[in-house]
Picture 1 (cartoon, rainbow, N blue to C red):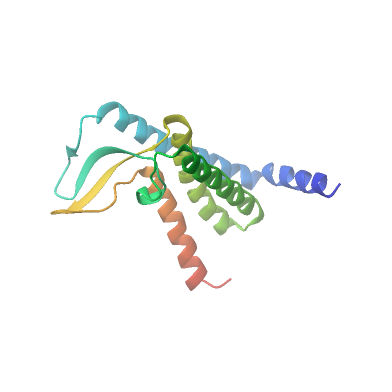
Picture 2 (picture 1 turned 90 degrees about the vertical axis):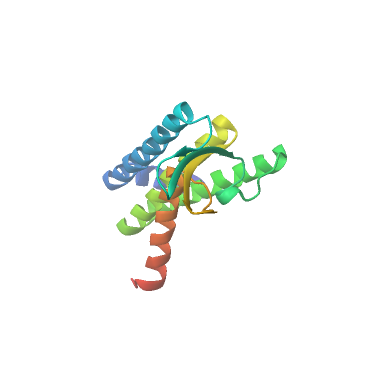
Length: 166
């Protein structure tokens, strides 16, 4: 009976008007990420495209997590990481539903990006990264629009946690 009550509570949280706003925002962020990846996959499959002295478009497929960590050909590790990622997304969604507006916004940005990359893991068996920032011979890790959303969300979360008291 306890689980039934918790399920009803979560369902009611989903249907709150303010939570619907954040759900729409997640969909918009996910859509922006998908559009950018579809454009790059369709148009930049032939190697690096020079934009300026600091930015290239260079499509690579990341089968690991952020910055290519845990990249492996092992399907067991890949599937385990995917399971961990979807669990983290589910926890973030629960936290979004239970939190205040500023925290909802932070979780929304992170979830929008995480869903974009998770979708790619499921559909393509890898995440297309294509933004190559560099200076001379130093290149930062190649990333995508979803990674930008995740990084912004985590950065705001850290700043809020350390410097802004409730």
